[in-house]
Length: 153
Image (cartoon, rainbow, N blue to C red; front, side, top):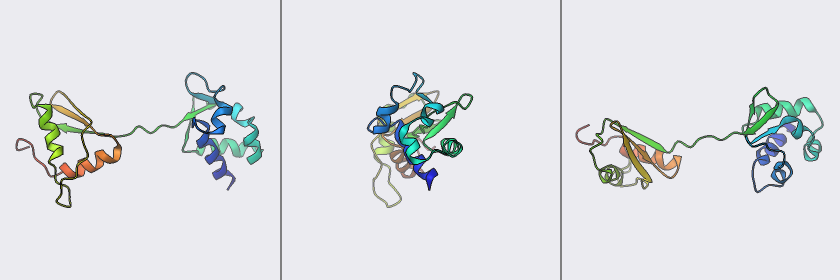
């Protein structure tokens, strides 16, 4: 129960709209790291628990943070969003509009055109990188085009 409370607290440290961020913002270095010793001295941490080992354990196991360097600091864990689909073996000579049309006309599993709009599409070495607004949009688009063929491929 205390570890959960600590994890929730740690999740707010790097959130700019939280009171915790206001306390820590001056202590966060240019690499966006915060020394563990600064966290251990925070009055609001001590309101949760004064057990230093439990706090350190919670820091290491917190999904919101990554322990960096020699273990003396943490930084926010940022999961990169996977919102790009790669289409392989489609020539560079194909027009960008044709790539957009692959998605604009894709029929989903329910038989309806349901593909989210393409944000951007670019080509490199016959590989098209098609980007959507969110990871969820990219997943929906991928399902929608899974059975599609382009130029008999």
